[in-house]
Image 1 (tube, rainbow, N blue to C red):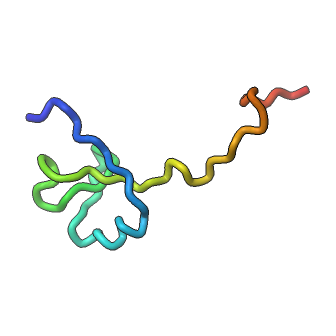
Image 2 (cartoon, rainbow, N blue to C red):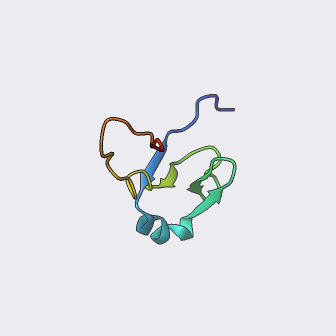
Length: 67
């Protein structure tokens, strides 16, 4: 059994939709893996949502305090 987790690779949502016939969603990994033998080999893919909806902070203080 593998002791080191396979790294997650982040790809755009449209690629996940196009690759849906060969991928399945693994709830344990919270990611997509290859159908059939993805539990032990192959990529572990996640939707790239890291940059979406991120707004730059207005100032150095990130917390909002009620004045």
